[in-house]
Length: 384
Image (tube, rainbow, N blue to C red; front, side, top):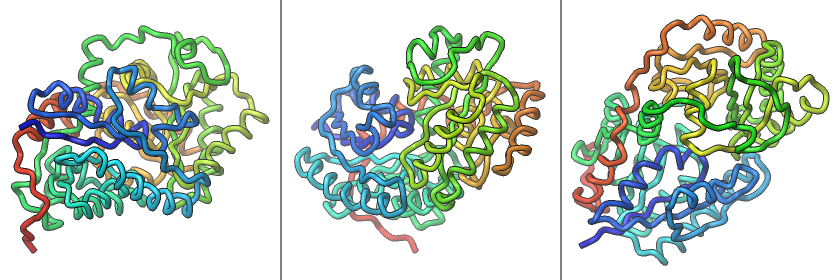
């Protein structure tokens, strides 16, 4: 009997984290993919990921508009509440055999709550990891709500087991985003013009002699400092004078502060070396990273995919605190001089050898194969 696997994508990072698994599930003869899009994945402000997903050939089964405007702590909590209502409707409509939720964003809590209360087996991808924000609490809460755990490495598996989960329900399959990174290594050339393809605003500069990539999000536990934190990064990157592709932040508490800081800088500062882009296809984004001088900011892509690709990274502040990282990462505080010095350090990194911390590039197929054969059960045997 064909299993109905419902995968919920709520944001642009969620898509890159699950894309190869979506393809493998869709292609598997014993699985029926039900794709639900929700939250910022449907918003043009954040790159309208839905259009990218559909252009990649996926059929969307259900759309749930769940984002409450505000970009503050209240709006995040209310979004979770509205999301739980909408996910309940989605699952009631689709009647899946299992639900897949991804990582640790606050919107994913809605998926987990709805599936758990509806007695639908919940599959959690990327549990057991540690970071320095509310995301860690969300991730661990979802672990306790989930029935099957697909983790990215052995350290994450050990954490999930220490939380009391049954060993026969925890599987180290790697992260599907690494599959995309492995695939672009077959042809890593930057075979497109980012400005011509993705538009955006800012300088139309010559980047043939090298460029930087910046992706900086607000830290939800420090959301009131978001504007000043991004101002520090802007000053440091401006000082380098190097052409820079800067990607818009996620929809988190404080994202309005980050966005306003960028807009204010554009109005007052010298932005000759900046071009701002909302979003890009996962493959294009990784090619842009691979061919850059390095990535600056606090995105997990600097820790995960860039460790595999060997791309130098300046990681700013506490957002990725505790996450397992490779030799490609230089950690700095959110202070312009430290960030600038960190950029100079990554310029001196000689080796670009990648590390398989989060997978080897075969995770998507492994996930689909496991979902076709694993015993699906809602009730768990407690091991406390």
